[in-house]
Length: 504
Length: 128
Image (cartoon, rainbow over all chains, first blue to last red; front, side):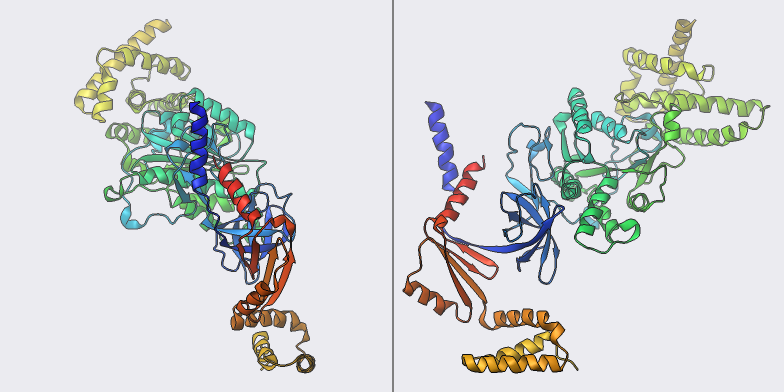
């Protein structure tokens, strides 16, 4: 019985919103339709980026406002739309629902759920295109965003509110870095948004399952514009993801948004632009393709305290074609972002994974957000590796090397080996510090590179169960003062003895 | 200096304002001859569009279409003519509206039909 009245009540509240008054609407007539775009006459008062309603509940967005016609991109099935159909303007700028309920969900760029878990109950709608916050509302990056990957957290640190590009050829582990970063945000109070642009649905499904298994979906939203969706969906997907991220940022929380990838986004925009007959430029991209990405990435910010102190970190991904970073889109995005993580297939096939090119990867602002402990060990690590690379190239020609050079090369090999890290095995920063501390201070010089994997694995077990609680000390103090350093050194030496015993 | 389509349209509208049908034909003929002499015929499309625009500016509306479920009464039609002075009024009967009327003025629409209300009611009920 209770159910019956509940249903009636629900219907009553819904019907209360209905009024039988005639309302004035603006209309247009479809002149031509095809390839996901439509041209219309009429609609003289329509705004740019306003939602348009086509017959059969198909929505579009006014994109080209010309003197006597309007060009629109369509989201959905265009088969039902024909010439002469009436188009209604809605008076709403394209917006999506935002609320805490989007976390843990898989949605399309319009905010419709794709995971079958029911409608997203949002009170608030926000436009997908917003102007980025101004200079006076910002603060420089000061809190680190731990990716959990040794090579990145030490040498290419990322701060909350930074924009760090992940660039590389196909199959070099770009998405893997992004996923690891999401997984590592567990318990860090960072909301994550993963925007998949033009990817295979099977790949996305696999990834969502992976995130769910790692317990990372609780704080993650996946925005999907699949490979079979129209280009218009791919075009708006990153802006929709950014709007969700901004919702958390404006509440004073920390958010991370990953755009995977922006090359496909640029392709989608090129397709739309060419169909709407905008003039093509270099590589047939329209003239405003730089603004396309700059206005998106500018929205990633670190706000100051008066404005809530929230942050939005962006990790855009760009796929290069056979390592060509000087193509149009890669150079554009490199110049917009605050640094890049450069991945190479050569390194990947040599077994160095993550396949990070340490020489070409940089982070322009992240080091100011690094913890003191990490900063102390990372400086030497960077220097050691740079010297190693130089010497390694030189040593290929020389057979006899002096003692010093040989030692440096040996240590370089050990370091390279230690910086390898399998996927889905992220590390907290204190464990990273301990490992890097050991190698740069020559505590591992007696070992061989092949032993490093076993050594590292054992070290974490040893340190976690160690009675000195050195990991806890680093975690709390966030720096290596004399006392911590002494304890750490002692612990590593103790472990080394144990390791040698176990090896023999 | 050649006249722009907009100027031509304004002149044409002024000349034909409040004149009889016969006169209108004569003026129009002269207008076309003028266009031919000044090699302006290729601009006909632009001029026609400009006439439409100028008409709209002068009278506020140019096209009015009213769709009803049942034929309009004479009185209603007269009232409509009075309000939409200077516009071309088209009437249309569509039983699918069930009741009420739908009024289209240029690119605006005023939907007071039962069909329109039912479809908006349907939309509200579907939003769960």
